[in-house]
Image (cartoon, rainbow, N blue to C red; front, side, top):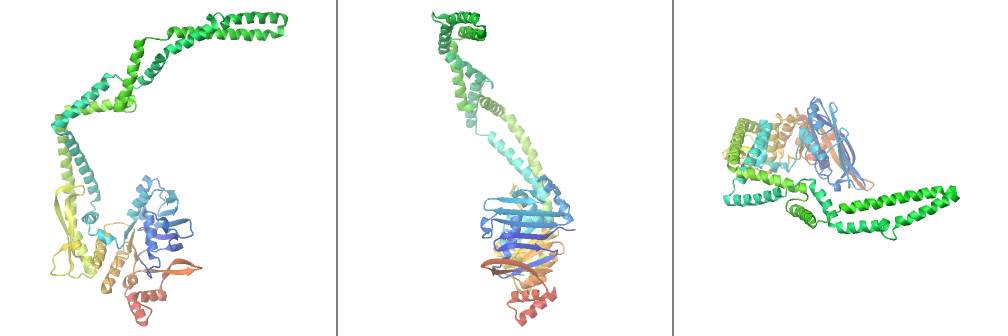
Length: 553
């Protein structure tokens, strides 16, 4: 079952408060007075396709705007890989896309799983092809014309592979040019690299040395003060005439005498003895500590020089010793490349030749696909143009070889058009009027439709600036497209609306001082009257004309 849009829900978007639209297969037309809100439907679809949100679109008085679409059909299974890569659970033949936004938040979901706007864009490219009035101008761009041809030729994968090969070739050429600099500049760089490498190598650095040296320097720089403090404490504890430990011996004796008289106070003597032991150990430890303190000025100067060297190198080459070492390794690698410049240039030359051969191979394959497809595309467009009123027009997709290849290949394209017999083919940008461009877009889309598998084709007033029999032809062409695709058309033309299999009308009404846009299906008499309105009014002649149009479909 071909995929199709089966349901569109819109809440609090501009004039729409709450809309639930069930859409069937085939060709659906949406009509209504100017300003009634038809563009809101397109806006909702664009939001679901990943367009940027506009907080001003949130309906006045509401906090959140929500749009939601349900797609159905077994063809949705082809989206499985895309959904899985994006972390979204695929659920059989149904796909629910939802987006909501407020003044402070923007959220999007696929089958209930949170997703990103980028994933919505990718999904939209697979499900919906939307054309509006402004899309006509893109048809005049050579880049867009080439993309259309590649779509028809189904050469996108070859183009992608070619682009990768081309960028690799350009990267190798850039690397070659960078290495193959002027001799003077090369010698200057060698001198600088040699100085940097020598300076870092002579420092004989290791990643864990800085912290160790810093600790040793801190002790050495303060050794005199540390010796003074240790000696002073030792003297006060045990060496001075009034030292603490000899005095504690007397208090220890007195406590022992106290214990003899009052045995219950034995714990005091024991605690005192323990204190004497602790103080004696402190005195001994400080004496040993003082003996090992290094007051060698030469060693202190060497440590200071080492610390200063670390700081100098870090200022030049990185914020840490590890970064300085890494800089030295990169400089040494660069030096090896420059000193082995001839060998490196030769290697790059070989890689460039290989890459150029790959670019040539892929470029020729791409050209072959385009050359084969271009006349077929032109033939199909000519046939569709005849259906759309250009009975004796000419159309050609002209490929031209580029002097230098680009990331898009070896070719440029120019779509040439002659709407009238006897006139030479000229580029579209030079001759096509807005009405002609509208029909050209439809003719091209009709020619491409058989090649793609996009579920929904949406046309937003691309039938502008045409009328009469041409409008009939546009309606018939869209109806033909609807045999293989679901087609949704926003239109002001009664001939186009009459050709649709179903028709919906957007109306605007004011309820309790608030404007509301409504969407409702019309059929039978209601549809007859809507077609008559589009023809100019519900007069008897307009109603007869409307009946004729509806009968013709």
